[in-house]
Length: 537
Ligand code: FSO
Ligand code: SF4
Image (tube, rainbow, N blue to C red; front, side, top):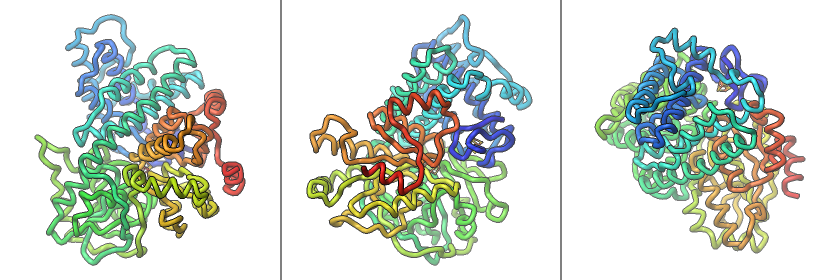
């Protein structure tokens, strides 16, 4: 195996024997093969000159399946590969495609053994040129993020054909001999498409569940047994709340599901108690002390410990061998969560690990409703800078940088955040400015779109030509591939001088990094004190 797609890759070079994430070598290889199958579908769909909805949906789901901490289950990945081969061959038949095609579009097999043999030849290192490899992987990881957003939106019945079209164009491009300039252009176009994918997801979430509202979220525990729901899927959240009503089982969010507490459609449920715990990587402790049943709707799942594995359920694209999986919806009906509810009833209530409240719900509509206050605060000098500290959290010790950075920020600055990165500072008491909290949480990493909307609105209000003239600085933490999509989106919007940490991606070769530095002034993080002095000027 060779995998270097996430920030925690071994020695910032690559995982070669096992993943730091817990992914086994065969699982990683099968994921490589799944990517290869997606390339073959993309080649076929490009030849067909049309991306059918089913093809778009399949590609989005397949790419999402390979994102870090989503699917650890070889049998399920093999199922997705087999479906992919059939999607590919149907396009061939439907559009009567003939002629010379890339191997990914014609190759075939149907046993695990054959899949594993083929997988050895199609991984990341099959491309020998380090810069070509780097640009292709950068594009593929960005597209994985885009795919996750597209998949989330389509669960709610929203989609943008331009997103599906580019998943095809981008994946097909990685089978072609292109110049460096052409490959850089494909990567940048992925940023434009990431904005579109986030826009359609924002529309899906807000039209279905209303606009997030400023909310106080309880972080203590109640007295009833509970279900802890994590990941990013709001439809699962909705159905779980409905199916637990009146059962005596309470519902809590964990990790990236915290922002569900900001939606009017969910706040109305009395048995929705609040958020329990912190970001994904602490689940091995927090799932233990939660005592109840746990539902993982998307990433980030870490290999569950034996002590609580029997209480964990996966659904959607997430899977882990030996963990019970809740089946997909059939005929527009809801998922059946009754087994989780029954399990929860037999469990002890959560052990309280903290008490109090945190405040969130500052998505674009809510911030724009406060626009007058915000503009006044900037004009009067009460707010000197906005600091975008969105992105992901992770296990690495070096991430304490972000806590320190938040603590060191002068009192006339406001942090704009989204994603699980917020857990590094969302429980600090950073105070308020004129009634506006100094940490404004827009929601999940999936809601990073809100931060772009806020920046573009401020640019308009202040009559600026360039987004970089705004009093906004960017200190982004990344972990997995959705963060790559968000980063490309920011570059597409013209944002410069982004600090990226806790380390620069291992998949960015020195030459590709040079391009990113020259064009966009991307910088690694250093010491919080020095970075702050540099960034605040
Ligand atoms: Fe975090 Fe995990 Fe939302 Fe990521 S839970 S790290 S960018 O997968 O998804 O922010
Ligand atoms: Fe390693 Fe990250 Fe790949 Fe897991 S996803 S194998 S930790 S690089």
